Amino acid sequence: MEQRVEDGLSPYHVFTRAEWAARREDTPMTLTPEEVAHLQAFNDRLSMREVEEIYLPLSRLLSMYVGAAQRLFRAMQRFLRTEDAKVPYVIGIGGSVAVGKSTTARVLQALLARWPNVPKVDLITTDGFLFPNAVLEREGLMQKKGFPESYDLQALLHFLTGVKAGRRPVRAPVYSHLVYDIVPGDYVEIDRPDILIVEGLNVLQAGRPPRDGKAIPFVSDFFDFSVYIDADEAVLETWYVDRFLRLRNTAFRDPMSYFHRYSKVSEQESRETALSLWRNINLVNLHENILPTRQRASLILQKGADHLIEQVALRRL
Image 1 (cartoon, rainbow, N blue to C red):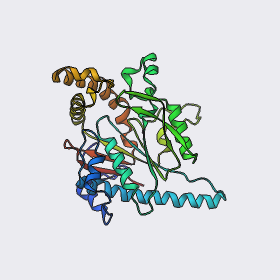
Image 2: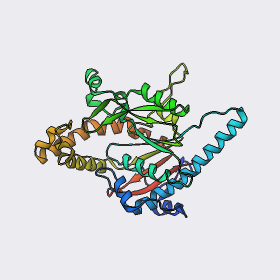
Image 3: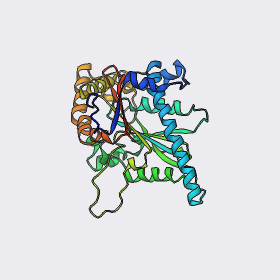
């Protein structure tokens, strides 16, 4: 993301960290240091200060958005003279591999679930909607896992349609990062939450509209608010390689791990493998599919090399 510039033409209000932190006002801290430590994703960093200065203001903002959406929904019920089921407020979180999407998603879920009215907040990742490895291998897509074409888009759209229609429950498939595949017959049930957070690489993706004007829904069409987490490419590469090396000494040692073979090679070989995976797969996906969606987000969080968010851009109304 470009440095702080507001020329009157940008669709975003841009805030320094200090300016954004001031928007917290009197929003109370509802998480303990132990809970914050537990919410931190592997190889990411999260502190009480980060929650206080970045996520509490965002929680306060989202409370305004959700409240406004609920009031509009009730007004529409009166206008249409209907008693439609409650419609969840859906928040999308996108960004590159290794940028910290999981941490942001979990922190927001924890904070939003502790509002005074105790809303029900559910979280899913789009990993569950990847095609099984057997399908990806058959279609020659294993090297494009995480690219838009590697997802069962129809299943994901069907899921989100059910969520927005207030159906109960709606099921999402479960993905295992250990075996690097969908878990057959395993599902998570989403039962009409007040808020649903959807986290994934390409959640803000939009395709080219058809010439005949027929409606083709995109995943982002179901979002009421969206967050893009951003960082410089060199920083992302470092984080990805560091995470891979840490996994080599932890999760990859499990014989069930899809990447178990990498736990037996030298650190140098592991580093070279990680760099190859990053530059030939993940960086390509970032350039071709993920980064172009950044300007579609309602909010952009810009991270520095220390994992701290340095700048926040909020889309103007």
